Amino acid sequence: MTGIQRAAQIGAAAIFLAGAGACANNSLGSVLGGVLGGGSQEISGSVQGVDTRSQQVFIQQSNGQTMGVGYDSRTQVVYQNQNYSVNSLERGDQVTVRIASTDASGPHTDYIRVDQSVSSTGGGTSGNLQTVQGNVRQINYQQGWFTLDSNNGVITVTLPYNPNQTDLNKFQNLRVGQNVRLYGVYVNSTRVELRQFY
Image (tube, one colour):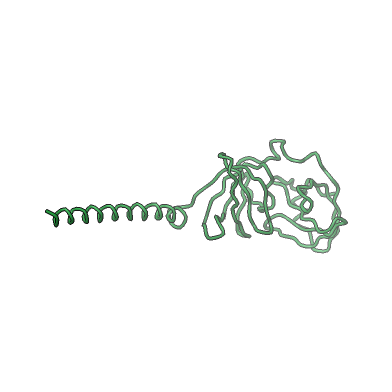
């Protein structure tokens, strides 16, 4: 009887361990599957800020948690079927972010869709219009921004989501070294969103 009881105990333990192992493998598989091969994930929320140094955009989700998501020069920002740079995102923009991959530094996105621009809802800083002048230092035509050497140091000027055709043409004809004057809104101390070229 003792041998049979011992065999039953060993069998029960083996079944328990096999089941626990399967559960662990399943949960790990589902995590890795969601990140690696099980299709891309999406998160939605409100933009809290963009850190250009660490190349992260911070999204506050509906549960109140803020998540930092990495981006790079290939990350697309799309609003009303037009492409913009990540630098064009404003605090308060409602976005859906596709998580393309995750590594030790956290999640990374290759695509951000702007569902609602804070500027279009009147929640932006459009009242703080200022004149900006300086010499063009660098231009990124694809992502819609340029830098100026101004009296306040180097300033990055980004195009708005919906620039008018005149301003878009002037931007596309900008050249390094050119002196420009424009009306813009300071998003922070080193970044201005273009409202209109002089």
